[in-house]
Image (cartoon, rainbow, N blue to C red; front, side, top):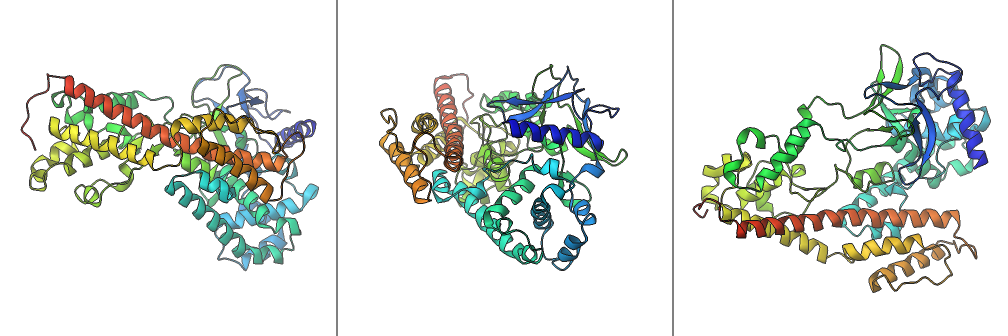
Length: 501
């Protein structure tokens, strides 16, 4: 801990020398006027807190272009690196930046970026680092496939870049796949967008901001969407076309509110960061750098959010559902709240209508209208049954995973007995499989505490269980919602009597 603190202080001093500042007038200190480095347990760990009360939209940090780590800045400082990469134009921009990062790491203290490099995380938990055990712990086919693709992609890019890394005579430990995973994860999780380079840039101090998902603080526009979505499940006479066309944020692309809180500003030649809301002194200042599902966060950044307003579940649909509507597949999902998306409801209502009548009611379905009580009851039952079927086909239940998470946190010694009375037989088998997997990989652990390597494996396993738990919660909430709607519809006598479709 003392070494980490010393490294941090060197970084902040180095940053101040090169014009990184949280004040409009650069002084002797990098931070202290608007921001301060703090620890936020359970909320991202080390991050940036408000050094004073901050107003929404206020400039809180500025990082000049000269301090950004880009392919351009690295190549300009090293002729050997520039020459080697000039003969390997087939490498992608991110591969090139990854090679540059490993090359710069090999310089050690002689690197101009050394104070920054020493503060990078020692390891990452993004999905490409998952072993076979952690990958299978995701349980859901789409997630397992995403992990497999990420691992295969990382291996391919590493082998492709190995030629130039050997030409650069990198140290043996920097040529390994493990080193490549670390460097590529650094690029994936910490780079920020710049207009002149598709690989992005590493932004010293600016990458200390932790993530906040857009949508956590809904605007008036979003509040209207949520209210209108509730109306979709009520009497069709209460829903009008003007509001229902804005449901579920599917028109948010035209919304003017900025989703990110930092950008490179050419006129000042610096990356500028702004407060996404008003903060009180001591609160963590967060950065929204895009809308991601939990699986995407796990893939690119190595974490998930317990309450992610942008999370969603795609349920398998019959081919006829896709062919009977014009909605794109990516709009047919269940929200994190458990509500079916506007497009999914529309598509199901149309699909549940006899084919010879779809043309006549299509405009009603696309405007968000219920078509009939019978139609609505059918699709609510269909959605509930579909979600139940998915849950039953998974190895463990929502309740079992909740108890398993508590048991995972208690694993401190691989050889000590663990109280398994509160977990199911399936979860107990998974715990035993984890211990066997760690031992198989050559890590037996100490007699008292698990080693750092085992802790990393345990953390990745925990992330997999957390992800599948959040996936199942969406399905459970959707079942509850559909069942509540069915109950209300069966007891509500105020619905108009409509002809069966």
